[in-house]
Image 1 (tube, helix red, strand yellow):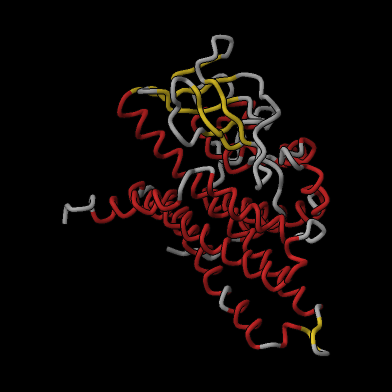
Image 2 (tube, helix red, strand yellow):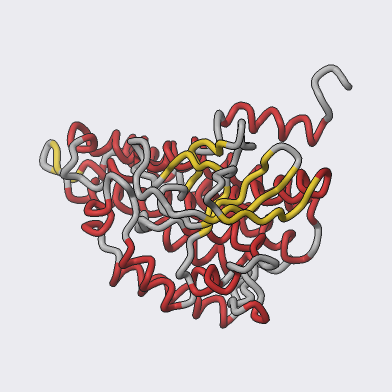
Length: 339
């Protein structure tokens, strides 16, 4: 396994790094709250072909690998881009045989995955559901794609994420059955794992930028006549994050590589590991960054609170992380009591 970036991948990384630096300053993130969506930024990303990168070229997409998508999402995470990229890229892969594939590739249509099975036809707290035109959900034994007008509103949440409940049995909506029975369950599980992989890459970017913000602040803030970054306890607290940050990037990259190379079982396990590890590291990095900002860290004027809130809110869309740890343990070692 060679995770060294190719010349093309470096070009992708540089292009999106420059794009987000230019088009998504922190003022854009702030202005997008509380919904957490900036239509203009999405349209500009569509002009670059980002929404269609996960789809094959024959379907009008970019034919990007999961490693390529990880580079895009890492850069998006660094700036807290207020666009539902992780969900759209994961859900759009399931729209190949629907009438909406071309629109999803062009970005004129936003897709979103329901991460929990619908209950009585209602998909709860769909990430991106407030702005998505198509929701992919598991409704009893059917995996369905349902198109309806996005509500453009949703419940308030501390991550300012565009969440919303969506009715996947709406009689006025267009509905396509993608799979039934065991095939539906298998494809739905793959959808959730894809979202976890992409969210892990996004959280890795978030954590990396949070550390940079913390380092910059500790070099600027002075106590006792010297920058607080000169104190050993502060140095250690920040230096200890470098290894875990590299680790989650490598873990997400390995999971992406396995998915690209056709090892679905290993890719699925690694995607969960990457998601859980990235969640933990992002929480720790933002906690320490806020801690070293002191009282300023929790004030709205400082940017680090934006990172702190999203590091906690984005992963919770999937549910309690402890339950995901248990599912991973069951997958690796068998259910409790089976050994």
